[in-house]
Image (cartoon, rainbow, N blue to C red):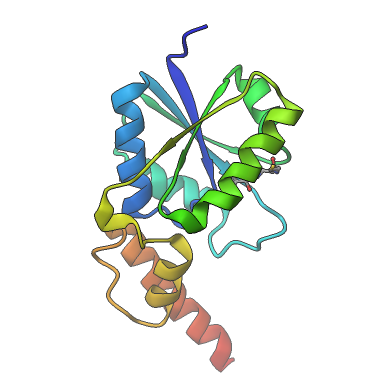
Length: 168
Ligand code: PNS
């Protein structure tokens, strides 16, 4: 069966320019894209699901081809609920490969019809990650080249909020 839509799952804590690059690349292949934000109870995200969703929504400027959802539990179950069989993921460097390879094959064991499509972001984003963007932003560094302007603003707000909590 030919697929016209894909699911792009991730933590998006927060969305970066690397994610946006991948979203744009995906839309050159697929007509529709569902961005799936994992709730992720293990990782303790900095931003709530609502905040992450809002930042993505504004960063993609309400593009009609994009739907933004969140999910709890297994990716395969979300894909089944969405009737989606194609997952897109970014592959930045060899260091990503091992985890992605394992994840794709494990997921395929759970849901044999699920396909993973990997795309390389522009080389200018190969070093970029949400975690480093967060760390630099929270420590007062300039992250304007790494993330959309709203994320830059939200991280600065978080840094101030965390600073206030520390002083209490
Ligand atoms: O942005 P991330 O943190 O690299 O995204 C990882 C994600 C969300 C794709 C992965 O952790 C995931 O699918 N989590 C849902 C739980 C699940 O299905 N785990 C089994 C993976 S084999």
